[in-house]
Image 1 (spheres, rainbow, N blue to C red):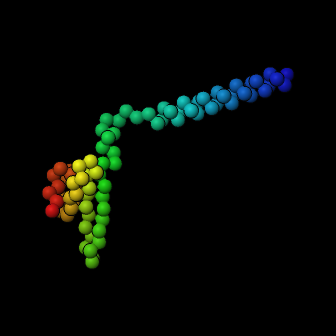
Image 2: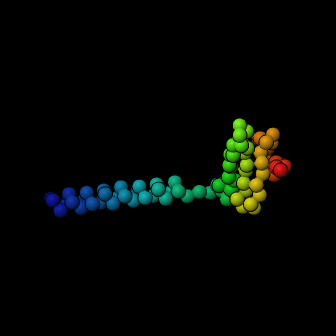
Image 3: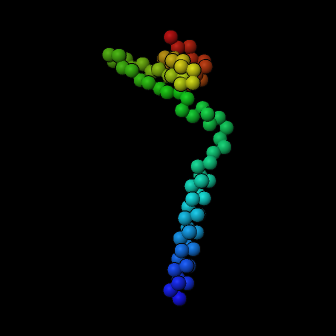
Length: 81
């Protein structure tokens, strides 16, 4: 009887581990279109005196643009300085 209980516990533990690993693998899988764009832009705020300046950096191309009155526009439409 004790051997049968031990085998049953081992099977339940292995089943639980496999279920958890399956859930971890499935939640880590992505198929999002445009996932390469995540993390592409960086934003930096600089305060000069009492005036804050906001710079947006495109990490793929290295382009740095100053965002003044261009808030809410796509990066390609910001003129910058």
